[in-house]
Image 1 (cartoon, rainbow, N blue to C red):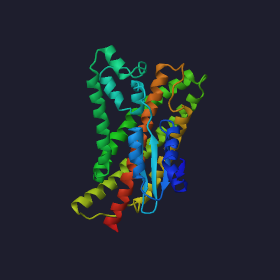
Image 2 (image 1 turned 135 degrees about the vertical axis):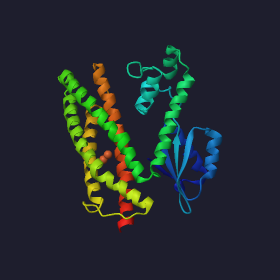
Image 3 (image 1 turned 90 degrees about the vertical axis):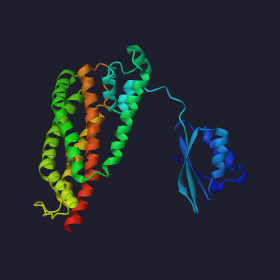
Image 4 (image 1 turned 120 degrees about the horizontal axis):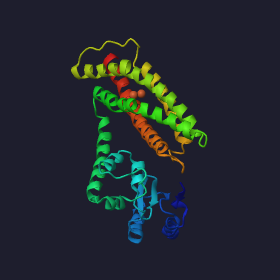
Length: 314
Ligand SMILES: [Fe+2]
Ligand SMILES: [Fe+2]
């Protein structure tokens, strides 16, 4: 991002230069101003003259240097279509299904159009969508404060269960799509084979977590809560299995990156049949779930388990 060093500009030209720079930005663009005092007067002048068309974000606030990122808002966009809403947040698919709104083949309509066509109250659907958004946020904020045995159970009951339930369908459909469309779209053959490997690796990976690592982490959490004695694990420090799990996450994540690339971010081609489209939608969902799953393990469960083990066993 471009930085404008305001200290180098002649005083009476400072504001005009910044305004000129801002006016030349297109929507969504931004630049940084670098200054030796708080540019608050500029902020007020911009509010007065450009209204609510920009964001003002301090990157550095003195005492010697002030840096502010000024971004220009995007002009009002067309409302997203229901297909785009689902792409943005797959949990919204559940809301649309509940109201019988077709987000796959009929996904090019706006929420308003789709509701009118079905004679459904748009406000009610909007409220349900907002509800989904807020649930997601609340849950995300909570993970970090959960006891580790609760978090481990959550990962098992939500993410491991999801993987096990989805793998059979994905395995079958990817094979079918590869045999029907492989000639015209060779990438689906590679995708089917990558998914087969991922499914096998995840199966073994989750077994290790479920039988060795997670039971031990749960014991740590109970020992901490009930202040009971904790025996050292047969595998030495918990860092050993964790290192192995993290390496496996990298491997599976890498294969999924490749699927994502090959499928062009899960964009079905024009001639794709409904199985093909369903496969890409499900792979997309699966990848998002996997990201959340690995995030909870790598960024919350594992580092906290290492810390807790040190605390209890020294
Ligand atoms: Fe896991
Ligand atoms: Fe894992």
